[in-house]
Figure 1 (cartoon, helix red, strand yellow):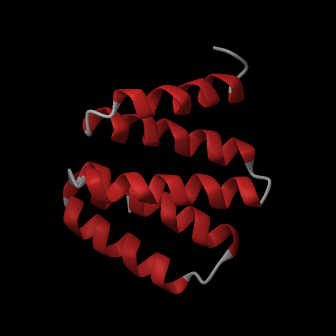
Figure 2 (cartoon, helix red, strand yellow; figure 1 turned 180 degrees about the vertical axis):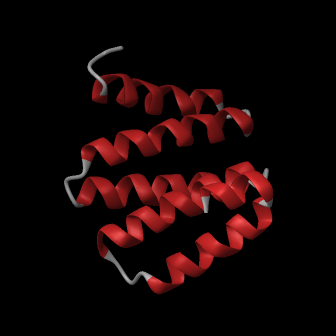
Length: 103
């Protein structure tokens, strides 16, 4: 999907949507959600990608995969910036700094 995001962003979105449809729940679903969120962001579909980042973060956190949740927050902050939602990005950035040891 990452290669498709670079060469054909809309094909990357379609591939990520198919992957998500195949994953009922669990870690695979969380990874598919994050993949879809990034694909939507690369395609410029920021209003659609932001809720996917939120869902992916929650799915990783629910499974105790805090490192993956933190990696997902990076994309989430970027999506919020693209949407001009700077106030909403601030608490996400704070959580991200905490996850990576205050850097």
